[in-house]
Image 1 (cartoon, rainbow, N blue to C red):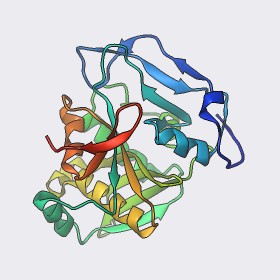
Image 2 (image 1 turned 180 degrees about the vertical axis):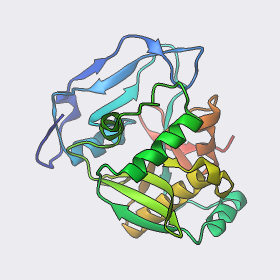
Image 3 (image 1 turned 45 degrees about the vertical axis):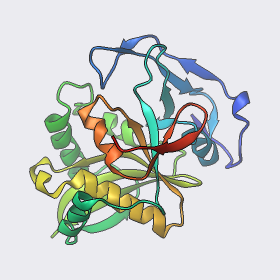
Image 4 (image 1 turned 135 degrees about the horizontal axis):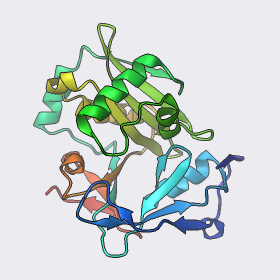
Length: 244
């Protein structure tokens, strides 16, 4: 996608394309279809924000949304940061990580980040198509030429604990991807990264933290419903989702 001026776009004028049927990344017994915003369209952060508000996500420079004809398992969710209240487990995780230093960095390749990313992928998503060893694949996945992306580093005594790839939208932050040291699982670094991004959104006076897709049947995604209150998008409107 090309980078354009930061002005609103009538979504009715934007073209979309669908893929053929392919294996679902989250529910292996199902086939998936993905809807993409026109990859040749001129993109800016305002249009990205508009599409995020109707359930789209960013992967590299591409914006997509599940478009499966016989499945609605992928539900876009976002946290209204001013209303969020941590539960007991999340409060414990927050307290446990008070020795963590969080700093922001521009999107650029570093061996330290890439080594942590490879370790995380090989531990959590082996054979899932993401376990690529080339730096180019990594950068293509996390970066885009037009998004306002920041890499938040989480460190304990100089040791890199986690990296959160975070996009700033017009009305919120989008938690694009987080990877962490799986040897530090007792710290619940993934949960802590979400809590930290909620806190950052509040500091920036933004309304939402977009968390991508909640999939009730996928253990890797079901945790998102523990952040309450949380809103879900049904294809037309956002509404509060009850904790399951």
